[in-house]
Each structure stands twice: as C-alpha cells, then as structure tokens.
Amino acid sequence: MQPQNRIQPHSTEIEQEVLSACLQGESTSVVGILSPSDFYTTSHQKIYQAIESLSKRMAPVDVLSVVDVLRSINELDACGGASYISSVMNNVPMAINLDHYCKVLKDKSAKRRMIQRCAELAISCYQDEEIGDIYERSKQIVTAADLPSIDRKRAVDISNVYPADKMLEEYRAYVSGMKNNRFVTGIHEIDKRIRGVGGGETLFIIARAGAYKTALLQNLMRNYVNASSWGAVFFSLEMPVPNITERFLQNFDRSSGKEIEDFYSHNLTECIDPIETKFKQQLKRFYVVPTKCSLSDMERYVRLIEDHHKVHIGLIGVDYMGLVNQTGKSEYDKVSEIARGSKDLAKFLNIPVVVLSQINRSGEDGSVEVNIQMGRGSGAIEEAADFMLGLWKEDDNLIAKILKNRKGAPGSKWILELDSSCFFIGPNAIEYNPVQHPARRRRADKEG
Image 1 (cartoon, helix red, strand yellow):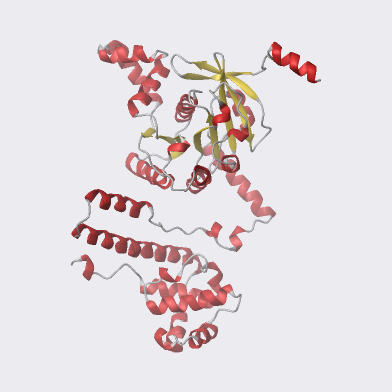
Image 2 (image 1 turned 135 degrees about the vertical axis):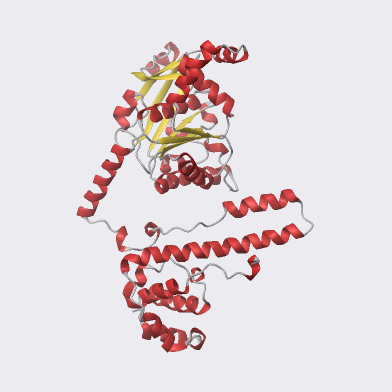
C-alpha cells in the first residue's frame, strides 16, 4: 500500500478513553499535557477544545457543560450531538492508565506531524531543487521534531507540590541516586568541597585557551569510567579523535606526544602493546563523539550508545560550549540558550553534565586569575551551573578556583598536580597562596 493511501497513526478508542476521563473529573490531569491537535478525529478535537476552555475558566467539566459549550458555538451536531458525548463518558477509564494513554496520543500525533513534514520533503525531491538544500532541510526537520514527552513539571499539577514528607522522600531518592552514580573529579581537595556532581546537576569549567581545560576534562572523565560501572560520552566538538587518542596514550605512558607518535611510526610493538592494553582497560565504557551537534543531538547520541553498546551512560562531557550547534541572533542569545539547555539536558537524562567554556577577553592570555564574571556572553552560565571551576596558569602551575558550589563555600584555590609533558592531572592539589609582587605591595601600602 502506498503511504498516501494509508490511514495515519491514531487510536479512536484511546482518544475516547481520555475524553471520558476528562468528563469524569480528571481534566486537570490532561489539560496542559495534551493539545487539541493530539486528537486525530475532528469531533474529538472539538470536544477536547470545549473541555480545555472550561478547565481554563476553572468551570466544572462534565457532559452537560461540554454540551452547552459546543451548542453555543454551533459545533454540537458536528460532534455527534449530546448522545455521542454521553456515550463517550460511558467508557470507564482507569486512572493509572491515563498517563500512558496521553503518551500514546502524543506519540501518534508526533508521527502524523513527521509524516506531513516528510511528505513536503518528498515533493521537494520531485522539483528542481539542489540536493544540498533538500538535505539541509531534512536535517532541520529531524532536529526540530517536537518529540513527545509527558512532563508534568511543565504543567500545573498536584504532583508538583511537595509537602514535608514528600520533600524527605525526594532527598532520600537523591542520596540513593548519588550512591549509584556520583561524578567525582578525582582531585581530592576539590571533591571534599563539592561532594560530587549528581544526576541533573551541571559543572562548568571556564578558562582561556591554553589553560588545560580540555586536558582536565579528559582526566576527569578517565577517572569517572575507572571508578564507575557506568559509561561516559565525550562530545569533542573541537579536537579530532587522533589528538584525543594521543593525549590518553600520553596519560597512560607518561610520555610526550612525540614519543607516542614515534612508537607507532616505527611500529614498536613492545612499547605499543602495553599502552594499548591499559588504554582499552581504563577507557572501557568511554565513548567519543567528534561531530558538531546540538544539545538535542547529544540526548539522541546517549540513547543510541546505550542501545548499541548495552551500557548505561552516567556522564556527559562537552568540549566546548562555543561549538554547540544553537540558533540565536547574538552570542548572548546562544550562550544563554546553551547554558540553560545543558541544565535541562542533565535533568532530562538525570545524569551529570560537564561543560567547558572559554572566558571573555578580560581573562587575557590565561595567566590572570579567573572570576565568575568572566563567563562568556552572559550571566546565564552562572545561573545554570550547580558548580563552576575557573582555571588559569601562573608560571608552571595550573590553578583551579571553585567559583560556584551548591554544597558549600566557593572561593578556594588549588594548585593542581600537572605534568604538562603528557597532559596528566593527578589527584593531589595544594592550596594556592599567591605571592604579592613588590610593586603591588608598595602600591597597597601607599593606598593604605
């Protein structure tokens, strides 16, 4: 059967079940979740519009009130009359199935929209259009697809109200989740203070170029997959896979990049084999995606990796924020959307998300102490972050400052254990106490 001759996805019975539930006192559980276009049958769309109208006015929703609304706009006969609406109510839906029914309707509605968009794309293929333009439009169709979800957090629903006992239940679930999947940096002094990044939380690391932020993220993610039974996805939007691979090989062998390259160019198997063994052992359940993509693409990649590799992903790392695909009129708009979107991604997947970001020009060459106001573009990074680290170099030292900390005091500064020859960052850190230069000291004394 040709696609144009097929009946579009829908379920008349489930549509009737949902309408019946609304007519029997469950309209507040549905309005705000479904829209009229989620119903396939025209009469059901009109009945639901009447239910939605009554609910928004906080008026009683029942057969009589819906009939009155439809009669007042001359749509009652088009909906089958009062007898049809009464017959719909005769269905006895189970409240426990209502969420499922709503999801089914959202799914089928999304499929109908996708069919329409693909049909429009097919027409373009028959017309005299450039294949590149058609391909780009096809990607936009998939990226912009409003995939269905039942998110009661976005609707006015009693489930969003937390009395004391429910607050305690939520906290117990949070602590339990941290036992299963807690991202710790592996740098002891920092971990003591932030106590791990949990599901739905974000860590932003900000620094100028050349301040080892990519190296830090690679080391942190290596630490995570070694300590956890869960996997991690590294979205390397800037650095190609060979460079990432070489850096990890340097980590494991504590060798320079030139030495690693020589091992392979001269096929020194006695050197290569032990490093590759360690590489595969320590990066088991670690996955690199080197393609520039959007935040919604990242969510899809996580699902794809989980399905293909049969692994549970517990951490996302993004290098770096400025290369995430995002529409926007200005840098401010883009940074704001990506920062907030990263938090939404962490909450949606219920896993930690670590994002690297360049700082603005006030950070100069990466040797100036970083502060929270240096976040590029807008204050959205500070707002979206649960934790923030700033990195800068001073002489041969790499210094990290806790700029924001949901679980304790910010402001502490630490000299990290850095071996710059192989991009290795170890677990030890010592407190940073800057030495004041004589000229600065004389100026401070004079001002005092």
